View (cartoon, rainbow, N blue to C red):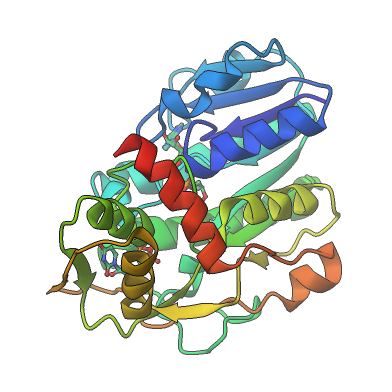
Length: 315
Ligand code: NAD
Ligand code: UDP
């Protein structure tokens, strides 16, 4: 089996490539434009003859993916898209291109290869949700014109494209609605809350809470998430499915936990809440439990300790 991971040098992507190399005999192709991806994340994999890096941008309209990759591919995980708000808002038009032009490029390549293709969708398709916890049947509350739209509307269009390629061409498609994920190999300047808090705490700098800190998220450890993605890929589920940890926590509680675990002298300061920042988020994962027999096992404290160990080495 030859497996392609787009965005393979990114945070989730590098863990996925490593896990796929461990479990499969075939090649793993890691495609990335290195916008937020880091070659250090995959340095240890370079010596593996089954691992190949393909520098490429999925929005490239001059050289299509099937010209770039001539080997036959059996499975594709499409992760190529910046995921942190500061990075996906840096060049919003590029972000929406990754989720439209880029997704079509990947889907066409999958069709040509007869490959099963999995889209890294997101809890952001629910926007600032009016239903809690979020079930897959909830259709969301998204601002089409706000600063997050390039990402969350982009990911919604991507789900539409995946569904249409499945209906029109019978392409085996999978869609994982990934909720907030954290762990080792996040960039120091990733900008998402867990990496920000840990880096700030390790430097004894103030932890920056945006807004009141009463907003909630539910954080999943990356190894759990990767297991869910692999199970989904190898299932026959074509409808979107939530993958995340259902333990919900406020951002204030998270800040306190990080200070405690790192034994930090940091204080907490409050900054402006970004526009359209979702107030409450918690996945209903009963579908994943039932149909994939998947449930996350790493508790937040345990995952945070592992993540702190990683950041201690890089900060
Ligand atoms: P990340 O930013 O660390 O990784 C994204 C990777 O894609 C990077 O290596 C980046 O260089 C690459 N990339 C970006 N645009 C590209 C393009 N046009 N062509 C080729 N490569 C490109 O983010 P992550 O946290 O690893 O997220 C991976 C995927 O999972 C993303 O699609 C994201 O939307 C989705 N997701 C992540 C989370 C999370 O909490 N981490 C939650 C929901 C969804
Ligand atoms: N956040 C925060 N301080 C930070 C970074 C983020 O308080 O330094 C907040 C952010 O406003 C949001 C939550 O933490 O309410 C999660 O933010 P993140 O960017 O990690 O993920 P997302 O908003 O995409 O869920």
